[in-house]
Length: 313
Image (cartoon, rainbow, N blue to C red; front, side):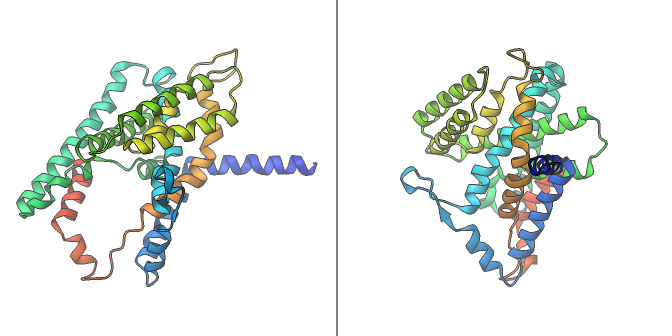
């Protein structure tokens, strides 16, 4: 076997390993555990300093911290993969039946309303009315962590159930982002949003070409992400919109759908790089210091969030 063949074989094995659902879930959980331990260790200040390192061009308001780049940038790649997968299920999969698709959508709506009501109930009974404006916090499901848990502990579940949970989590997250945009954002830029949608339309045309050119698709996708970020809407929405533009049916005489091709091309980076880095920066919650973890966990707003997420969801 030649050196090139060995390299190709090793690369294919690495791709299969990193895209396996269990592997990606474990990588995410390990990254989250490392962050949680570091953020509560004697060296927690170094973790905070690392998270707050700022990079990016300030001229276009992209001088962001590493934690923000992970949450808004890398997570958009994950949402692109999710958008591609959902597009396939809606067009050619189990969600093409409207009645079937409506079930997880309605479940997601209920999974937002009930946690918000529980949050407000706990806050009112605790007498901390000033925290009532945070009712939207428990409405969102962290889809990345939800799918990681599903990947690790849900082996053997029917595909239809996984699709249901995937749809529920995505719709839940998107609705939560809409809620935040409507109730908590005051500076949405309509022009930037329209330009972003125009970029998404260009991306859709390029994705349907007989031979998609990555050197065209990637820059257009990046510009769309920047414009969504500039518009004031959560930048991960760009990933979902771009993913939904990928054709789910075979075109130009191809043997497989482009949703499968794009999924196979992007998922290794999403699973092996984007999600673990996001988890590392998202999970580093410091519970020590001050009056200790007990004082933090017993605060009314924390109890309200936990009750909303655990009981409500």
